[in-house]
Length: 118
Image 1 (cartoon, rainbow, N blue to C red):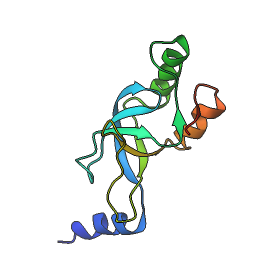
Image 2 (image 1 turned 90 degrees about the vertical axis):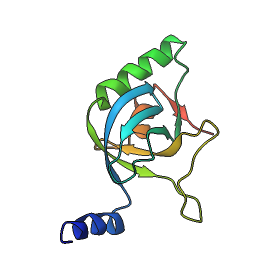
Image 3 (image 1 turned 90 degrees about the horizontal axis):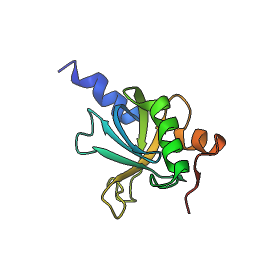
């Protein structure tokens, strides 16, 4: 029972989850393992739109993201609806932000490999 309390406190006090990035699909889509949210397997960054992989800019953006994240433990903040359900977009990817230790979306924008999502 005592082991449950720290996990519960983390969930209540911190809106982020520890996650392991297992695959970088493209610069704005990642596969991850989130122990406290096992249903979340694929995450779409909510604030940025990276170029498509069929372009050289898209491949460059993916390489940058791989160098920053692949097989690293990061913090993930998942977006939720007003009713508290996890948000998904049309391809059923969960939406959220990744911190490694800075916001990945902002880092990609600053490096010029992605643009703001509209």
